[in-house]
Amino acid sequence: MIADKIKFGTDGWRAIIAQDFTVYNVARVSQALADWLHSQDPSPKVVVGHDCRFGGGLFTEVVSKVLCANGVKVLLAKGFISTPMISFGVLELKAQQGVVITASHNPPTYNGYKLKGAHGGPSSPKDITAVETLIKDDVTIPTEGLDHWESKGLLEYVNLEEMYVTYLQSKFDFEALNKSPFKLAYDAMFGAGQNVIRRLLPSAVLLHCDDNPGFHGQAPEPLDKNLQELAKTIRTTPELKIGLATDGDADRIGLYDEDGNFVDAHHIILLLTHYLYKYKHMTGKVAIAFSTTDRVKRMCEAYGLPVEVTPIGFKYISEIMVHEDVLVGGEESGGIAVKGHIPERDGIYDGLVIYEFMTKSGKTLKELIQEVYDVVGTFVYERNDLQLENSKKEAIIKKAGENGYPRFGKYTFNRIETIDGVKYHLDNGGWMMLRASGTEPLLRIYAEGNTKEETLDILEEVKKTIL
Image (cartoon, rainbow, N blue to C red):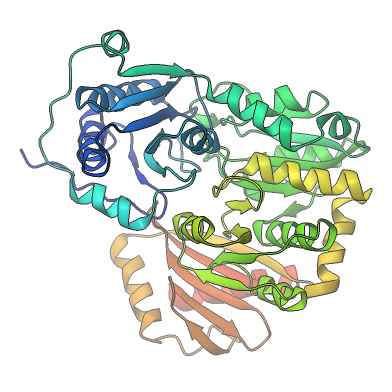
């Protein structure tokens, strides 16, 4: 038979459930993973779990059965878990690999397959490619149930949530956080972070912390446009001083200040770098994806910290963290890792670090952001995602790569970078960027200006030029 071509993008393989993301295709990937693992280790062990999405239990069962049938020991999480729990579990349980069934922030019609390495973060690009090349058209799905493989000693159930919560309790003073003068609201977006915050911060106001695999029809991506209920809750509840949101598998973060204003990932990366360096006297390299603000470079220069820019995809940042001393590693999309934790994006951990920063300093989020602005200057960032036919999307990126856009309305530029997508450094001191999504049929337009009005105007002029 001729099977679907399976391609891993910037963060795993993702596809529409029942169209391309099927039991059979999940089995094909799992067989390739088993073949690759045996080429690396005679007795491989894999941690497997799923988030809150539709079909998670079914697909993890398929993964587990195929791996077990190939002699791979499976440590299977019961119930839903977050992606950081899988990565932490791989490291803690000394496994060779982790598999999490999740489509992260994608719309609810999607599911996905992420690979996690023995180091406790995304598998390296070369290992992912090696697995991908072993995916065959034909596969046999074992008929034996999970009980059979458990009786054979090839499957064992593990409580990753309990392990992760215990770990967090060793890293943060929750007695102090629960007595913080800055009351916190948390929006799980119906995702996998809901139980953790409920357990650790019983003083928090919770939103969308219930089981809804369809996410009420909305993509669980922590962007301002998707979090208006959280924003309104903060604006109408005077005692709430910070809003935390995480995506479907809880590895991405979004924040709100005490006025209900969205705090994007660029500002969060800067806040974390500022806190760890200036307040906690920690050092190390700062690794950022190509779509991240250049203000990070400005802060690193001011603090004498090395900085490295990577292609988009946290796997590139994680690889640097494994081999070098990294203080903060982060992406525009809200995936951020910090020193002292695993080399993995973790929205809950990042949120707790910021909450600790506020509680220990006695300062509001707005006041702390002003400290950042005192170092790097003020800026405003926005992003537009355009749904376009692939041919149109590819034509725009090709034209941009060939320097086919001399200007964008009134906005001229002085320099172009093409590490991953096309980034234009504007003469007004801001920047804009064009890039095709690696996980969805989208063309992303990124822009940074000196004010919100200017930034929105840049986006509008870019759309007029390219469409």
